[in-house]
Length: 173
Ligand code: IMP
Ligand code: MG
Image (cartoon, rainbow, N blue to C red; front, side, top):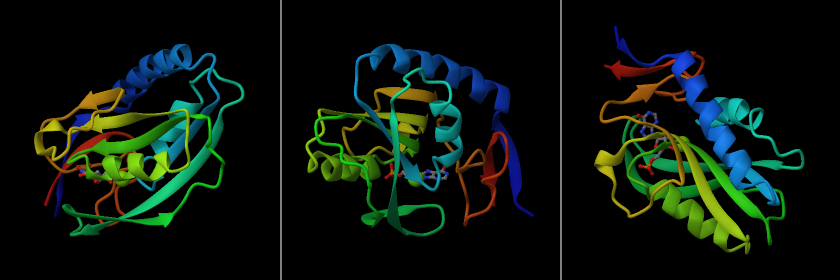
């Protein structure tokens, strides 16, 4: 049986989202904000985050990428499964992503979204795993930094399972 070791409890996740949302609300107070969630892993985080950001006229969209590789490791090849549907030209885009690991996904996303001429593109990640980084990319907003392990729960999956867990766990197979 796989083992689930607790990494972040739901209260800890919620408290940090409150802080980050406050910061984002202040930074984007005069912005034409479009929040773009990266499916599927970011959907739980995004749902909690957007309800704490004070910006009445923000727009919400989703993008979905295909990262090729095994269930727990990407080989770095990324494709687009679903593009955004909102026109982001001249707008301030905030990408909401679950995990920043090698950085290849975010690098791809930045390159892709820049083609639509947004005014700015920044990123908010739930978890930064800095150890396996292959690009120089950094997120402007990071909720938590985690050193090692394959994480599941709170939207994060292993083979589409464990997304419904309220906290984040290290999955030991
Ligand atoms: P990157 O391109 O290596 O930065 O990969 C980021 C993507 O890999 C994230 O969007 C996640 O979907 C996935 N990923 C990386 N590490 C984990 C993990 O520990 N658990 C679940 N998904 C992960
Ligand atoms: Mg992802």
